Length: 151
Image 1 (cartoon, one colour):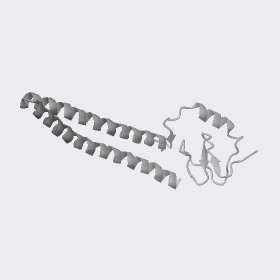
Image 2 (tube, rainbow, N blue to C red):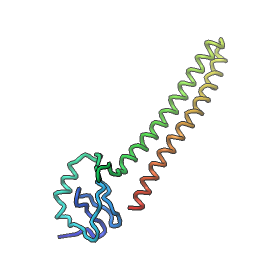
Image 3 (tube, rainbow, N blue to C red):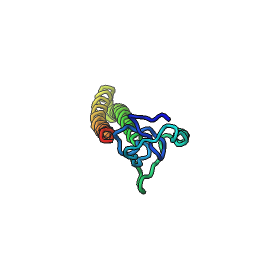
Image 4 (cartoon, helix red, strand yellow):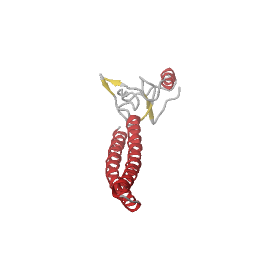
């Protein structure tokens, strides 16, 4: 039977973990100390783990366990939201300012001026909102990296 020397296999879910980790990276269960199950012993658990969905809530001692892929998905969503907010705010400001300047100012010149002013103003506001969303995403990704470094 062939054992994995630099990696350990979780006895609960069959996931291959690095040698220094204390907890399974998938299910969060405590890995055994000084004993590494062989690949053959965990073949059934590995096949079962493959058939499960990639992301699922995992309970550890009555609580939901840490799952880095959820944090990464959260960061991706934050970046997408930031991009959408910037585009929409700028477009709404440009169109609204142009229409308002044209209708209430009585001309094309004021319409263009209103579009530039309102578009620029809402772009600035959206940039601030997008920056904060991107910062939240980076903080979440830093947490993932910290967890990887201590496991």
